[in-house]
Image (cartoon, rainbow, N blue to C red; front, side):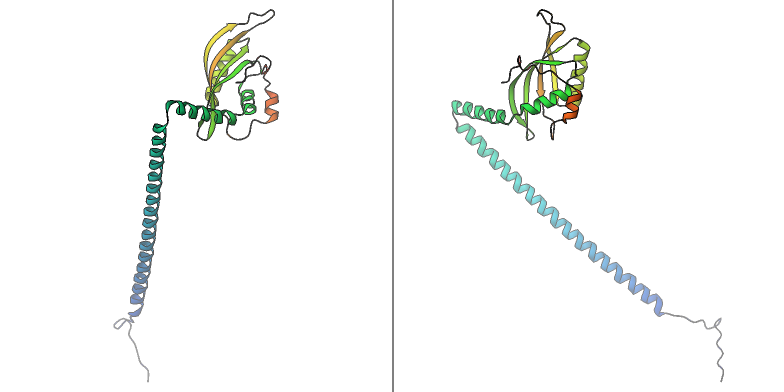
Length: 212
C-alpha cells in the first residue's frame, strides 16, 4: 500500500529543534552571568583588600610621623643640632666625588675648565644624595658659558646660577672666571662611559680646587 503525503497541505514540522536551541542559549547565558558575577565579586574583594592595606599603611605612616614629632619635640636644641650634624655627616660620606667629576666631564664643554669647586651642603632627595656647590670655571668666551648653563638646565643634572664674572689678572692669563651656585643631582645609573669622557676633556685644576 502506498501512502501519499502532501507537504503543501500538511508540512513537516520539527518542534523539538527550536526548543533545544532555546534551552542551549539560556543555559549558556546563565553560565556566563554566573561567571561575570563571580569575577565581579572577586574583583570587589580584591579592591576592598587593597583599600584596607592602604588604610593600614597610612595609619602606620601617621603613627611613625607622630612618633618622630614627639621625639623631635623631646630633644633639646643642642641635641637637635647634633642630630642635624649627624645626618649631614652621613650624607657627606655617601657623596661620590668620582661621580661628580664624571658628571662634570659630561656637562662642561672642552674649552671650559674648573678652577675651584666646593660642596656647601649635602642632603637626600628621592633616595639620591644631592648637593649644593660653589663652582668657578674659566673660559675665554662668555657665549660658551651661557650655552653651558642652558645645556645644564635642559639635562637636569646641574642647575647653575651665575653669581659673578671676573677677568683673570695673573701674568699671561686670559679669559675670565665665572663663579656659580650649582644644585647638583647625580645622574641615575653608572657614571658616564670612559670613551665619552675622553671625547670631552675638562681640566679639573686639582691643585687649585677645594674639596670640602
